[in-house]
Amino acid sequence: MNTDTNYLKTIAEEIAANTTPNLSGNKPNHHLEREALRLEEAIIQNLHIISNFTQRDTFHFNTLSKLVNICDILFEASNSVDADVTVLINLLAHVKEILPDEIRPNLKLPKAFVVIQEAVLLESWSAHLAELKRHGVDPRLIEIAGIPFKRFTLANYKLYWRDFTWLKGYLAKLEMMDWENPDCSSKIEAMMSLLIGRDFNDDRFYVYCKKYVIERAKVADCKRTRLLALAACEKLVLQDTQIGMPSFDLRGNSISTRLIKWIKEEIDFVETHEREQSFTKLRFNLYTNRIAFFFKLLSEQKVFGDTSFKELAQQIASTCLSEGGEDILQTTIISKAYPKDRKTLEEMESLLVKMLEYLRSFRPTK
Image (cartoon, rainbow, N blue to C red; front, side):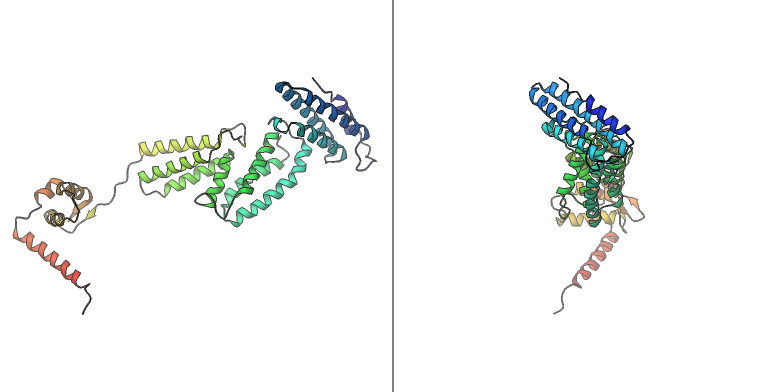
């Protein structure tokens, strides 16, 4: 089934070719207006008659596409949304409203429609821009967040219905944001979360996210905490991802897919090539036999609970150095736990007496 739009197109082409000024002022061309009304009735009638979804969808898309092309003919002739262009915009709106949920994403937007929406969208973004600045969001991220609005209003982009619906969904999310109580650790992360959730897969946002993850992992003080930081970022991306969300750029992979792949590669690199940073051992100003005897005294007083002295000796060997920065062996600590010479006992007694005297200095005087 086909509704002939050729006559409407012929009228539009004649109007576009006519260089004579429109003497009717703001009134549309009479023939154009009358044919548009006739077509509207015929198209709506056909849409109600067709019961097969595939046939109705094809008819709906083809008809809207033809009307968009006719609308562009009139718009390009005057380079303005004049009365004639408005007739086509209204016709498109009425046809679209019959099946609003069945508009294909790849339907081209009329150039006049883009111009009409431009002021509304820029006004909305201006309000959100001020809000983002007021809450101290990173200026670079704010600039990136405004890319969809700039793209929609630039004349060198061919725009489709999916571009408009994506932008409207993005605006709806911005409207719902509670900046006073963001559901993230910071307002910057809240904005990043929103953009990931809308699958804003622009390359500039992808690079921003990578740099953010790198800075977050860089502050980690060791291999383990760096891996935890990367894993936490991976988890946040997965939590923000919405299955089935249309991408900002239909030709590119989703932002979540790209980020998860990159983070996993970072994790693999750290696990494979980065060495665990060794901690600094505690250096004693005592020889090994004195250290062994000192810890044996502490162990027998149950300072370390039920930890066996053998286990304690292993921990001492792993974390302590003797005088001169020498490593201490577990076997040496166990073998020298009980002093055999009087000098060692006297030196340790002197140390403990000094500690006791120092402790007593904290007693309140009567």
